[in-house]
Image (cartoon, rainbow, N blue to C red; front, side):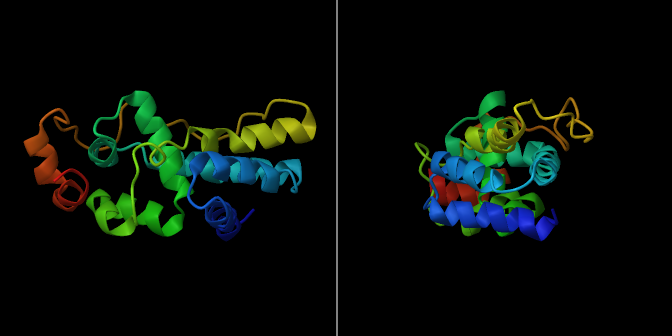
Length: 172
C-alpha cells in the first residue's frame, strides 16, 4: 500500500463518518476487510509510523490545550485521532502544532481528540481476515520519552505563550 492509498482510506472514512472518530474506525475496519491481509499490515505500518512520529512534547502541549489536559493515554488517543484527521492536518500539526488552530474547523472535547478505536482498526481487520493476531510490524517503537523539550502543561501562562492561536481560539 502506497502512502497516498493510506491517506485516501483515512480521508474517505473520515468524510463518510462526518468526523466521528468511532464511526470512522468502524468504516475503516469495513474498508480494510476488502483488502488482502498484507495490505492491511501495510496500512498498519503507515499508521504506526505516523503514530510514533507524533510522539512529541510540542504536540502533547497542543493536545493539552485542546482537551483541557491530556494524560499519557489521552495523548496516545489524540495521536490516533490526529492521524484520522488526514494528511493535511497531521503534517501541518507536526510542522507547527499551534497551526491546529487554523487547520481544525471545530473541536468538540466530547467527540474530537480521542481516536483510540482508529488505532485498533488494522489489528481488528487483520484478525477478522486471518483468524490470527497481526504479526510484529517491524517498525521501531516510539522512544521512551517524547521528542523535544517538555514544558509545564499545568501552567496556563506557559500554554498560552507556546500555543497563542490554539489558546485564543479554544481556551481564551
